[in-house]
Image 1 (cartoon, rainbow, N blue to C red):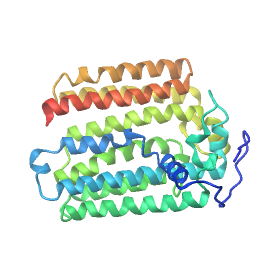
Image 2: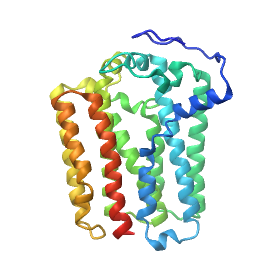
Image 3: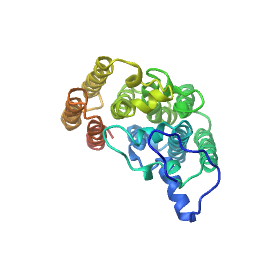
Image 4: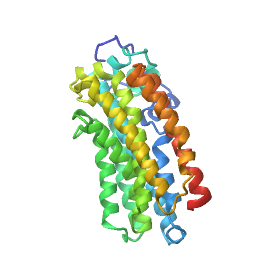
Length: 324
């Protein structure tokens, strides 16, 4: 299927000739399961558990089911986002504009590898997996998890509606809030369920991961601003003056740096956590230079992803050496 620049693709439910392998590869791309940064929160949740919590009966099974639930949430959210973008034509516009033309193979609905009908079924299946896996995790813990862990998992499920349903990303600041809260909940829901309580350092780590993801998406949204405006997707970049969303990017950096300092000051974490997180801090500074100053938004987005990875490594080192 060929998509003309700036024109919404024709909606079709007829499957083009494809092999089973092509369909599976298309669904895998649609799911975004290969974006491993989505699992950082779950990994940190398991590592932050005390030895007593890790050895409690049902914890291992529950944590594995929480991982499956996280995969279901990621698949449903990302697939639904692509489905909505395909239907309203914003993906076709965004992939033919901005700093660079982007590869349609990354959007299997646009390339024809997946049909609209298949995507709808895939979204429904992923949502079902997310719900059932969460229920299974709480069952594995004999339903003895604190109330807040149920609420936090519910927040994760609500964030599935980033683009569809409540369409959270269509409200000013809604997309950023959904990504931040969804990422935080991805750590805190399994952690509080298995630990039977929350901790200040877990909240700070969750906040850092949430901020780092927002510091990727906010730059990407600037590049997609024309397509978003055309479908009334009111992202911060699409609705606010340049000075406002650029100031927000600076604020995200300041909050990230402040959370890093607070984490290093907590009882369980060593002071040199500041040093292990310094490379991520440096890349985020460079991101501010490339984005708000030079307006090289896709370059800044890539730097945000690299900083996210470096930040996770910076958290992992003190966790393995001291916190465990």
